[in-house]
Length: 72
Image 1 (tube, helix red, strand yellow):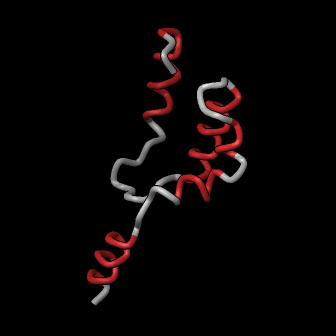
Image 2: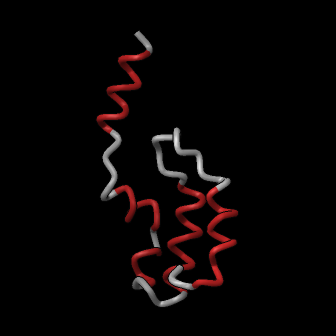
């Protein structure tokens, strides 16, 4: 956030982060990226399709294989 006043907000948000969840929390990601775009920090056209944009850079194939191997 680059704002010293946001320290408490960040601490509160940290409590909701599950560090053992290997997949991106898309509902939160949509909120974050939309907010960042509204602040002018990224182009708004990038968040017209947040899921498509994010998943263009995320590859879960390795995770899918690992999870499948655990089910055997």
